Image (cartoon, rainbow, N blue to C red; front, top):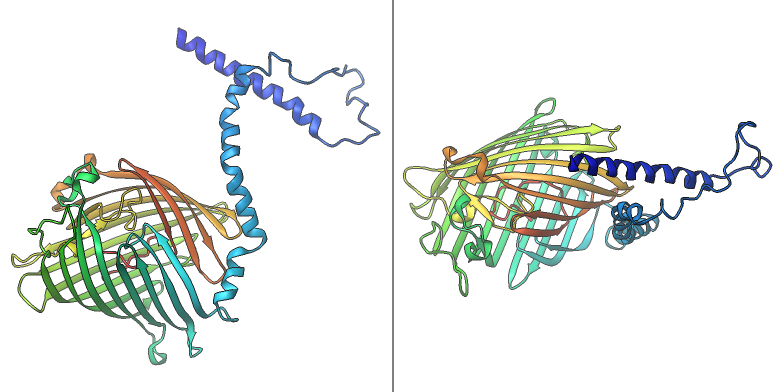
Length: 446
């Protein structure tokens, strides 16, 4: 009975607040001076004072308005900065300094926080219309603390020698002095401070991928990757255990990967509708020894649903990846599948979850904030596993967050995301496209 009385009181207060708000809105409406004293109905008696009484504008009314006042206060600085950003076209004006007149090439600074190597600063040079043939070339370098280095070079040709075949070539170099690894897979300690270990890694990876459209939105590719890596225990305490496969060893290997893609998205940079389906199979064999040999496969489905004529977009994504060792060989730890802030589970620090398998689901609501600013609200749920029988609903890790993405007409983007999980909050500032996955390094690309 007490609960019912309390609910009735709340409803009466809300009703009173809404009723009191209507006269205030009416007073603010513009009126013609010749008609302001003429009642709509001659028989109707006009109230002398429509302002709320002291009792109506009392403590409970103000208490109910507190959330609105708080939200206005929090969002006000962001709103003002975003309006300024749009009015002066800030990102476009900045790009004028670093790009050529045609906006097809240039050199610009880059920085990130929470990214593949934990954060850093560097430079990127690119050209998107080399020889006026729409060939793309890109070189990037990133320096991070304490002494991490990452460099990447890529080349894309949409029509090799004028044919229907596409070519992609990538070269990646890494020097990581304080990488993070959590032993135990999905059973890693819940207290991340207790479970975190550190390692050093030097890796050079190169790959060539050739493919072509088969029919409609369906394409096939074949990739050959060669890489060399050397990993060892980190400097200081909490070093990665020497019993983990790949620690204190050198690996040179070749990987062969056929790939099938179905892509019906209306825009690969800012899609509002369509499907993206990607399936791969890989075989990796060590060529400088007999310790590592394994296969892998991935399946990914993305669905973009346009709402309000493309003004809002709902993204649904499912991702599965699995590695299996062959002939009683091992898989190096830096090649394992990962889930973290750089790999789809955005509420967890880099390297937080890794194992032979990974299952991930993402739901994201994208909406316009201003012309070149896009907001997002998202939920991530996933888990790593060793065998499929280890999968269960109790061990799914969930993160919830929001972000902003600043874009330009030339398809440059910079995103800011904040996500929370049982581990706390994670902040990511990075210039790239969401869910753009790269094979070739445990870091998931730059």
